Length: 112
Length: 114
Image (cartoon, rainbow over all chains, first blue to last red; front, side):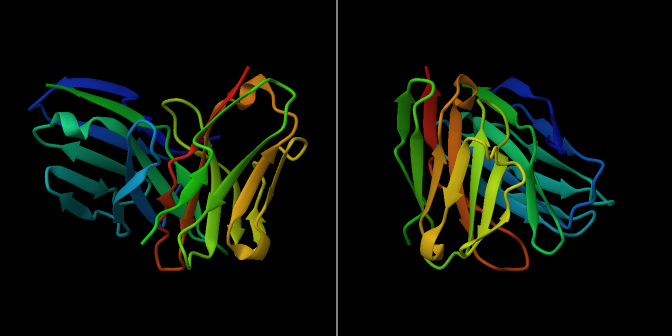
């Protein structure tokens, strides 16, 4: 059972358009990460956010952690074909050891 | 620095046959994970090791799945016997101790059970 719901599940857009992906949960996380996965490869870490309300930018990608640390968003400005892939959020619960739970995934296709 | 290495990349077997996957984590990483990923979905944890100890195997179907991490380095995940529903990508990841968990993944093994 995956506790992190991502929306939308699929997204197909034209090059140059903007988009936002959402990651929602009823659980509070000590940190949240975003990964991108290309076909035939494992997920690659893009960013980690740890403070409620935190915003991080990575070139055209903007990541935000919700104030209550239960949700996050990923915004891409002027999408390019190289942004195509499966985007995954992953939340970490603090405990005896840090348990990482992945979201349901958002498959993005950017058409040239 | 070498990344996480998995083998084989692809495996096709008939149902009821056994299959094994191998993972070599990044040198110095104490934590090793095995995840299963269905097409277009997020990875789901099967088992997590801290050195040689399996600290979370609650999602591992123990009637047919087994795993080991001898000497706290390489790991092997086995399925016996395989079922049609086991077709998926099996991902191995490793991480080192730190304030925030950062997972480094291998390329995975794509299993097809016919």
